[in-house]
Amino acid sequence: MIEFDQIMEKAESYRSEISAFLRDMIRIPSESCEEKEVVLRIKEEMEKVGFDKIEIDEMGNILGYIGSGSHLIAMDAHIDTVGVGDESLWDYDPFEGYEDDEIIVGRGASDQEGGMASMVYAGKIIKDLGLEDDYTLIITGTVQEEDCDGLCWHYIIEEDDIKPEFVVITEPSSCNIYRGHRGRMEMKVSTHGVSCHGSAPERGDNAIYKMAPIINELKALHPNLTPHDFLGKGSLTVSEIFYSSPSRCAVADGCSISIDRRLTAGESWQFAVQQVKNLPAVNEADAEVEMYKYERPSYTGLKYPIDAYFPTWLIEADHPVCQTTVEAYKELFKEEPLVDKWTFSTNGVSIMGRHGIPCIGFGPGHEDQAHAPNEKTWKSELVKAAAIYAAIPKLFVEKYADQMPEETENLLAEAEK
Image 1: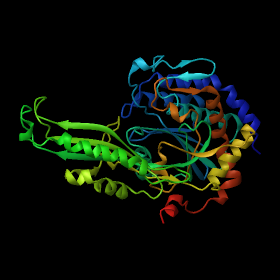
Image 2: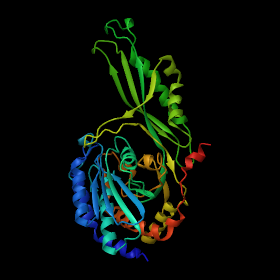
Image 3: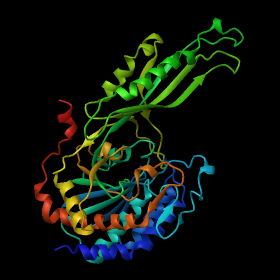
Image 4: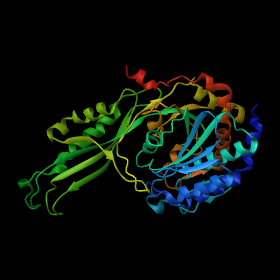
């Protein structure tokens, strides 16, 4: 019998410890591929609260274990962050971890070190209240997500050979329950020209001019992309532009752009690439369209190349993993949850999108805080998240584990038929 009120009381009792731990992580800059010091700080906290085993794999992901039962359950937070951008837009030092009675401010507060802080103290609550059961819980702090979502979990599944029954994604969800999101991919479009002296541009062929109508056609394509009732429409934006030229007083002989393309139901990477290849300006310029490959080494020096394609995923609302989370929410918080989806993408692109391992989302913090100046999270949400993370494993084993399907179908496979 799970005493949900005791879990809430215990989570509330750790409010100050969760907040202090999060502030410590915020104070350690940890952009993608520079996460070593924050990983070591997480290891220290896991040791302090009494995890049974702690490992750091060759990629640099940290994995903390509680229990040794037969049901393997994982909870994940990526612990890398984006940069701070223009510091003049911040009211507080982004690496101070400013706090008042309600909020904590700093880079990573919502996206996504708040989820890490709540998970570690969920482990403490499980230990304190004797909530261990026939499960092994792995709490992961994963690297390089901001650079390449899902790469860390592709490595964990393929190389560490860890295949959980399900994974709780702790990305910010405003403490709502999320059961999917759009996928994405990164494309590059390149045009080529001939350089000459800028005083007589007609002697050359300007690659930037060739790119200009392509950009306009991409802008026009965005509002006409495929819609989906639950996940929303596909989207694209030109995110970067590059050029090559002998000098400032020369015609550019090369130009390329990056495209961030969000994929909804029915949109494969092949479809999205062909859509751009079919644009009249792309054909007129004889432009090249390709998908990026990610090859940047992790902080340990490990290279694990992968195509920059991150599949869309969605599980059904009555899936046992979703129902476990909904019941835990109701019992703990005495209200009905909102079951929805993220706008951005998460490590679920690999866990469920590539590997078919069901994911469910619940995280402290709000999506609109991700990558924003004055990023903040709410202490009350950190407490709620710690409580639900502590309750989910035992509730799943007691009530829902025997309802798990042999395979979880990605609902988007049906949507694409």
